[in-house]
Image (cartoon, rainbow, N blue to C red; front, side):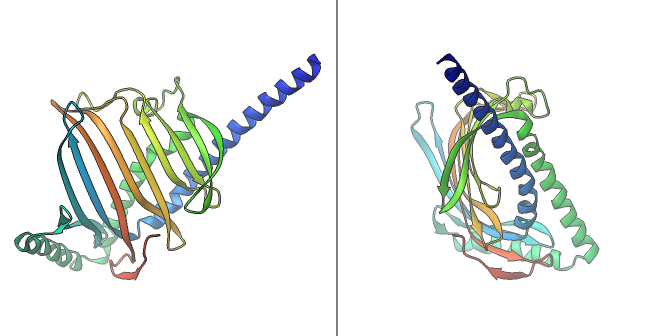
Length: 275
């Protein structure tokens, strides 16, 4: 009987180790897959709607604002064009000013040489790669546990729990050691399609410049667009913290739509509805 029990325990240990290893392998592959997805995503413009609510110290809402803007690429450079406020079109005077700013930026982009346009594209690519650096450190900064299979928007996903390693001392350790999360990874594309993250402790940014308080949370969900790329669908951020001497308690809900593909010349080549 003891031999049977010992064998069963051994199998459980081996199974757990195998699951943890396979979970990490999936995450490593997903980080690699994100590089190609990000390259394709950089060829899409979109519309973003932001709803931002601020709360007082008791949790009561004290202000709310809503904006909508188009993200365009002019001469290889991103441009934000404000189109709505508080779920209404801009007043005529403000709409005229925003259109004048857009026309000026478009005219400047039209005067660029091919070399200048290529330099802008290269600068944007370097910036994207810089922002992606923290993602490359995720496999080493966390212990992963495969929770099982699930579905999101009709697609099969792995659900993986990510717990920070207390002993991680790599770059961005101050952030990664204080965040835990749950990741949904598409089984066909190895793409992160949903991320839920929460701050386990206060997180400081810079030298006392800003601090994110324990309990702040982040939800990020993507959807398949044009059968070639995963693009943001919804982002929800609940944050409580301090920036310099000002405290803040807010929630931001961002939705993305109207994805359109463009060429490096900034000429739109197709309109694709987001699922």
